[in-house]
Image (cartoon, rainbow, N blue to C red; front, side, top):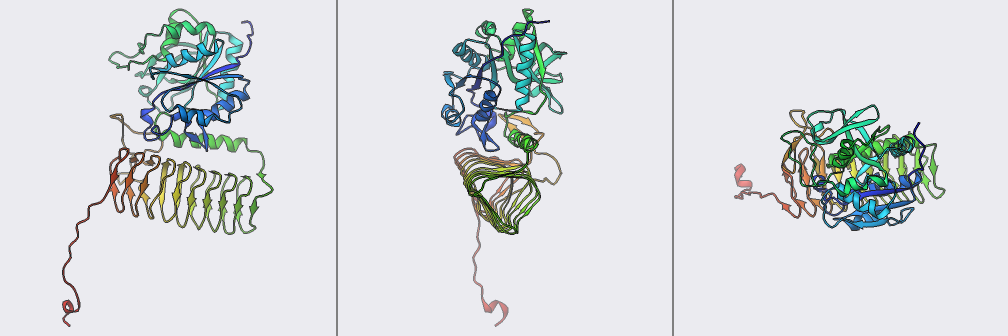
Length: 464
């Protein structure tokens, strides 16, 4: 029986990559700072680590550092920040964090939405077994192994890894437990993922998975722990919708009874068919219909016949009113407005204005203004899923392929129509009457050129 070792009390959080596959949401933030159910991923992760007994955290940062620092400004412990001068790979980022802490560590990618139980399970098994390293793994399910770093376990032992493999049933989750003695395997990483299929084309980046393979090649035992709960890697925009659903469902499972602040006002004429978590100075008004669990931030209001098909999370100060419809598994951020006849489903960040007759499904960045009657088409005539291009590569998302994705600080004119699966870049505008069939890059405006014909007309045309 292996000797029981001391529990891990330190963690390295990796938040230094450029996240280009996450466009358009990587432009104004590091993707670890993207909020899921109104809490930045990296903040959600650090909160969970503290709950699990972690006392020291090193956060490795790079492009978008300011957004990560802002997300962790009020975290329960003050992290140590380590800057990676260039985003040259996860192994070099992890090495910087491990050197800063100089002890046994958990190493976690900051851009994952993961059940706290996954982290707990990895820590417990690592403590019980005492290997040099342990990796959290997850069944691939319907996903293609070519899209991930694949793990080949036998029981709880990791036999090997392969980057973008042609086969395999499990993938690495980007969550590892490491002894301090594992540091040389990161220091001596070859700077490229050599464990790839013949004909594979790995980028010149030092990958943590290659360091694991080096340990395995040296005969060191590496533990493979299957994640018991949800785990979503926010690699591409559609993963936002998947993560939002998984986190919201977990919140609903953990919800015990109702929490209603004494300053909140709930009208007797409201129809409520779910549980409420209502903050200070909130209002739920007359004729409102709530058909599921609702989390309502401080100062938010749902009034005058608004319909919420829960579960729904609403950020502080947001106003939902005038017979608008909010779909199930939707999160809207702080200080937004969703008004008369508007329909919204998906994820919206802070200060989104959806005033009149809009129909939006997808992900909406910060401070987006929708012109009246903006519509997102989400059903194709062939009933199929939109094929995307991500950095030039064709992909068909498993979730949200036909949703629309609006970058931060963009806007639409009246009667704009966004076709299925289209993305609008940061600081861009889609003009009135435009039917958008292609993605719009950052900092562009798309306008409709209208050709008008004017000729004489009047009573004489009718024989007067």
